Amino acid sequence: MKKPTFREALQFWVKLGFISFGGPAGQIAIMHDYLVDKKKWISDSKFLHALNYCMILPGPEAQQLATYIGWMLHGSWGGLAAGILFVLPAMVLLLGLSAIYVTFGNIPWIYAMFDGLKPAVIAIVILALIKIGKKSLLSPFHYFVALMAFVCIFFMNIPFPLIIIGTIILAAIMRQFVPTFFAKTNTSATQNQTDEKEFYINKDTVVPNIGFKPKRFWKQVGLSFFLWTMPLIAFYFLTSDFLFWKKLIIFFTQAAFVTFGGAYAVLPYVAQVSVAKFNWLTNSQMLDGLALGETTPGPLIMVLAFVGFMAGHNHFGNSLAMGALGLVTTTFYTFLPCFFFIFVGAPIIERTQENKKIKEILALVTAAVVGVVLNLTIYLGKSVLFPSDISLISIDYIALSWTVVSFIALYRYKVNMIPWIGISAVFGLINYMILH
Image 1 (cartoon, rainbow, N blue to C red):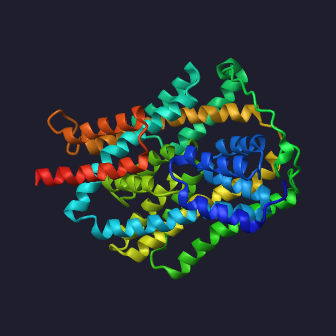
Image 2 (cartoon, rainbow, N blue to C red):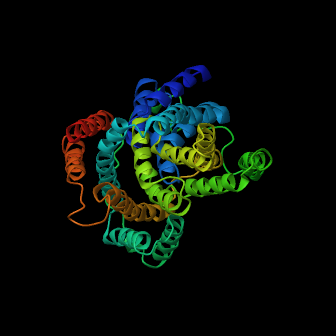
């Protein structure tokens, strides 16, 4: 198999950015189908090796996998093209939807459509909780960690980053003294013995300039710090409210570094801080943003960009321009660490086998994420099902019914998420017409 041209790869990365619906599982499946099965640009073993590394990183694994494969095919420029184009269409589309949302969202019938979406979003979050739980709760110890994480964030209001750090420390200690807690379930990894020579990148391929090179490492660290600092300096000299932008940049940088287990894991932290502490948006708007995020291609972590939009829009007196600037800034700082992890880590990971210790420790982090997502489910569910206070009198039975119907449709009958969001919007509209 000859090397694909940069133009051929670019065409696929552009297409992927527009069709990458369905969350990380769907996005990874699209890449596997095209890159491994159809084009044979990369073998199955190399694809899975890259995926295993991306799955233990904070951040959206599908976007990082695209960056990793782009880097293997065409170096740094290939990685940049793949990673940026994975996000860019979603960012532009979400910007348009956010502008429409704040401009027309208070029109009664549009408000009613979002009222229909919210119960469906609760069902989607419950579905995510089940999926993450099945993958990560592998032993009684994992269940215990998930429960403790829930107690910490729900009852004790401990910030998400501290829970992640505490879990990593606990995992390192327990692995040292009680390694039996981490006994791996017997998985029969019988790979198909395909002739890998028919793939351009295969298990025998040696990617240039791999391994740890101190000079390159510090150059990448310096460049990343430069890119992180430059917008901050620009905001200092060019804006009147530097403290707002500084707060936004630091907050979303922190969020990017603790996004273990996908977007659903970090959303409670984002909601906890941006809604309750910074007052950038309301609970209801957070739910609406999650619904918008589910309808766009690209990683669900793009919901953070909606939060950035609402922060800029609300802070600067309903300004669409400041909202757009908030969205672009949030996107930049959410994904900058993703590129850093790949460009720094991929050359090293290509030289090494999987590190069992690190993988087991991070598997425990994913277990903690289950407890955090349970908190998100309750946090969002309260605002939808109990709009005034938690009692049988104030429960919204229509929202509860549609949450149950949505869960059954998505879980039992495997209805595609995107059409169901449309159906839910129509349900909200019909419900409004009947009641009014």
